[in-house]
Length: 505
Image 1: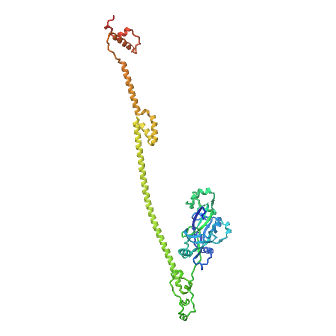
Image 2: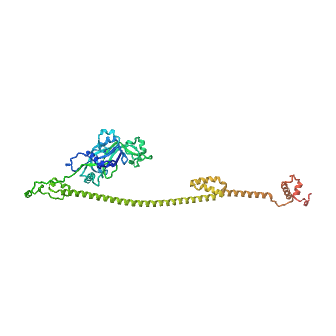
Image 3: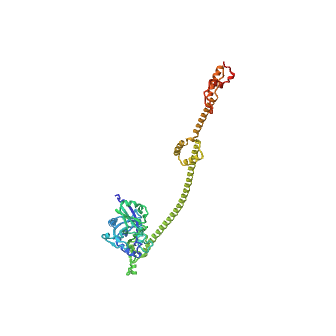
């Protein structure tokens, strides 16, 4: 069936170690461990030697974890029972299930004393959800061995196994807390959807810093439909919940000697009985695998056979662990060196790209500037060719057109064609030409008036008429200093001709 929860989250904050939080007195760890052992499921280990029962605190209710999430009392009381039958896996890989959860309980934070479910409504501070379950040794014997070793306070791997719980949930609220505050009873809750949406991107669960601009810290409180999905075992501790315990599995290696046996008894061994008399013949046998250890074998071998086998197995596991650790450290070192080299190479490439971009930008700027300069020169030359410009005109025009694009310059050119039409060279030339033609015509007309053409005199009569006519024309030119008077016919003729040379009859 498809999971209907809107969100799924892995809360890698729960330690399955036989201690309580490091914030508490470390000397209380053994007492807390003893309390936690009460929640280990009852399993017949003599019959089910392939099972490893465990118990651990799954989460701290009402207290935020380092991943920025929290569960309140109401939700804890509602969902704790749903942890039962859910899987236990390794590193949240659901293809590596190694066990399951069988029981749940509520315990005090720090002491693991049991809390009755009906008392939860009264608790505002932090408390634990404690789970019991089992690990299948046959699935992963190495993990089972490490969990048992993590229970040994004398081991270097003490407290090394951790757990993180997985939840699916349909909604969430936001809790606002001061710095260094973890208990939500001291916080402010934001439940309005619109207010949540405004700041949810700052939550760690959504990739944010978990902090607001005012310095307050915000956490995601799971709400709505909340469904436990299981527990993941990991080597990466992250929060306030710590502790996994298992039952002590000690092997009784003692061999009882039959004090009543005698040399005589030894000598009376029946030759028909091929089996050894375990009371009399204790032998050393090299054990290579645990399946060889049977009730019959324990009667036949010395204690050293068992202890040597156990020592060899411990050494084998230890050597494998050390080799695996060294391999991981070497891989981490190689990866770190590769990362450093890649980082250095990346910085070099990045620097080269920046330099190329700078050069490209400079070339582009130079190209644009050159294109602008050429366009400016062409425009000024065009205007200079078209108009008769003074230096003052050129300064004004240069200031106006230096930043214009082609479209704007075309519009500007049309505008100045109107404003500077009087300075248009072509128009001025045409005007000058017309003026010269007009002046020439006027001069020609003036000359025609001043020097009238005189026709040759062919007869006395024609001479007289011409003289009279010239006399009339001349009489019209009256000096400015003398008043104009109408001349007589005689005067006209006398002025036109020398009458002394003519005889009038």
